Length: 138
Length: 177
Image 1: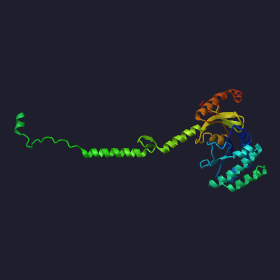
Image 2: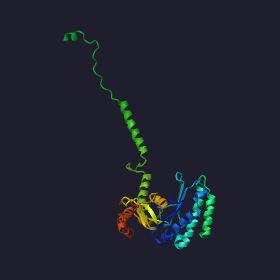
Image 3: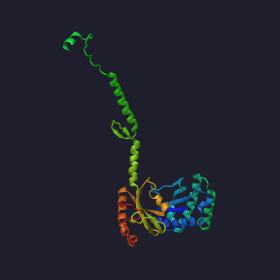
Image 4: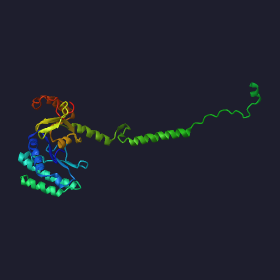
């Protein structure tokens, strides 16, 4: 991974896709990497990649998944954003949706992945505080 | 020599050769072995079955697998990977150069994927800083056709023609197809 916090997306060539990947993916990734040091939470995780799926619900190819590579200590999560909400939301509201989903994903990762030497609780708290400070929570 | 042979005739009477008995035991053994071998092979071939007319057919699980595979080939996706940030990215079509500078949003690769096939694009998303956009969904034939069209026509895109020299195909595509 080229940065500790990676955000990416899988979207269609539609206005909904545009709302996700035109600005928001990069904004969220830059925000996390600028304000948080992943190494401060332990040595158990060296990278967290979250890929937001913003495709139509009929899409059978891209599914939610969470994996941890013990060799590289990198977490990979592919998570679907609620399509009906994406349709209604503005680009700024989509960023809030992504932030909310990101927090939920971290909680899921913390529950699923028993990683040694990593302070999930502390990371969760800091990410939540960061999103609140940036107005990214409802 | 002839005299000696006549003088010392063999004492043991020469019996007529007995008629060869049919090797029934051996025959039965071979037949049994063959039946067992066929049965063993048959049991191992769980992908085959007999229908009501005793004709060979694919087993129901194998038929399901085939249908799923055919269905997956109808659920294909042609995608484009674009640079998320401006910067250097690996280039497989740049001659001696192994990297190319891409501006955010420029094409790195065209590809296709089908349901159940993971990971070919995933590495780019996480390690290179790319984003994934679906450009078409449908049969694999159409996906392959569109992928080929886009790879060839990439050379004509303004983002490529402004380069000196332009490259023949997208930086992330190692071959035309």
